[in-house]
Amino acid sequence: MEYHLLSELIHRRATVFGDKEVIKNKDKKTGQWHSVSWKEFSDKINKLAEVLADFGIKEEDKIGVYSQNMEQCLVVDFATFCNRAITTPMYATSSIPQIKYIIEEAEVNLLFVGEQFQYDNAYSVLKEKKILKQIVIFDPEVKKASDDTSSVYFDEFLNRPTSSAAIVQKRKSEASADDVVHIIYTSGTTGEPKGVILKNSNYTNAMKIHDERLAYLPKEGISMCFLPLTHIFEKAWSIYCLHRGYSLAINLDPREIQTTIKEIKPSCMCSVPRFWEKVYAGVQEKIESSSPLIRKIFLHAIKTGKEYVFEYRNKGIQAPWWLKTKFNFYNKTVYQALKKAVGIENGTIYPCAGAPLSDNINIFIQSVNIPLIYGYGLTETTATVSCFVKTGFTIGTVGKVMSDTKVRIGENNEILVRGGSVMFGYYKKPKETAAVFTEDGFLKTGDAGYLTENNEIAITERIKDLYKTSNGKYIAPQQIETRLAEDKYIDVVAAIGDQRKYVTALIVPAFDELKIYAKENAINYKNMEDLCALPEIYQLLESRIKPLLVEFANFEQIKKFTIIPRPFTIDSGELTNTLKLKRSFLLEKYKKEIEEMYN
Image 1 (spheres, rainbow, N blue to C red):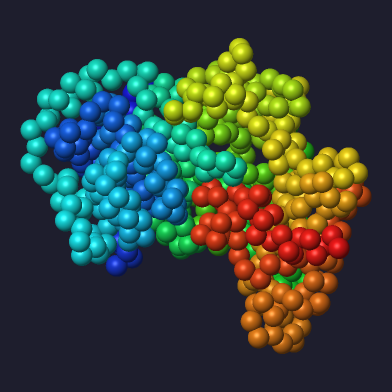
Image 2 (cartoon, rainbow, N blue to C red):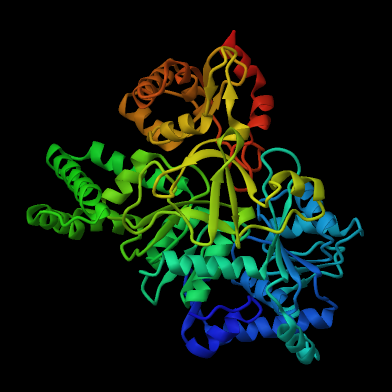
């Protein structure tokens, strides 16, 4: 397969695919999906590239994109590449101080925004009249401030007459593998965010190593663009899909994914483990609420799938005819019904990374023949460092190291990575850059683990998150949190224990399930805070936590926990933009509740 620089990728593919669909957008008002062809997509990119050149964008200028997933995000990306400029994406949920930090450090004077929330925040920065000079608004329904005389809507900006076609063509012809294309800021669980510098060569390398690993995929497909395009996982995956000639269905609102996924029935979609935890919890609830006969069928189907997948197919061994027959029967009935309920009946690959995935959930997903490919990567590695192979993968690992990627284990069992996908440093942060690389050029990931004989990575803990109890015992909180997330009554867990006598936890329950339980057990309550404070609810969660942690050491057991009657959110500060726990923030915000658990 041909490999092109990002400045040429879409235009080269457009000459091959022409009027075929490349983008599907959903109209917010009508709910209808509309298609954009490769030719239309290429033409939009070229036109915007000329507008940007006319506007005064020069090579290596930084252009900001502050929006939820929209087609325009991709148009801006590739139009920027055509000018040998650099895109700096910002999470749609980012606050004013967060975007202001990025705008000022990256010197972003042109910012594309999505909807009202992003516009309002961006305009407050624009009014300071420092770095930011121009806002372009994607959504025509956004209401501009009464004193805003400069901001323009995207269609208005795009349709400006231009005279820079020759300039853009010259820039494209001079583009090189060494051009910086993205500065992607990490979400920052601790300290200020760092801008990861990624070049054309990083993405070209990513395309090559994924082509090798995923050679079995069909020639055609449609990917649901679900995770934020600001996230390197979705960014790199979407670019890879475009490289393969796949189309992208843009999911605007993450809260609508359960609807849009059933409408599109995507063949692929990258996601974080939280998505599959909810699928698992939904199936477990369905099994528990079924009649004895249906429950028996479900459990037998799962047992059959587990035996077939893990004892035979994954080992490359021919299964007995009777087992294969049963598996095929369940694949067309029980498994297919389950997939249809989610909207993934046409699946060929569902990459999953970004956080630990419970082994039990992973086994279940594989057993019902969902093509989940679990992997591991960082923004600093242009996403994938390792992932499952189609067959021969090992549960308990994050898959086999990608080709052209070297991994070794350093001090404190830290995973070190070197290869063509590794970043070129942090923007304007030479000290931080030097600190994150070894003398011989390996990236320090901050994750601890080991390599198997089959060159698969097993992650044991996030080094910065590792707790040491006052008794000197080391605890990996993510392992505890991941295990408890399997339970249908538990939404999020934050384990506590650093320099403490024993482990405690803050638990956000699954509120909908809790309401059902209260109704079924005739428990009266006024509101969610009242319900979560009842001893019956504490006893319920306690009874479910103990069996889940039975395989953990005694010092890893949760001795006490506090039920939080509100969800952890990005807006309230408990989560990063990539939905990771902000542990230091939690320790401060819930200081009183934590101290009470140790009194």
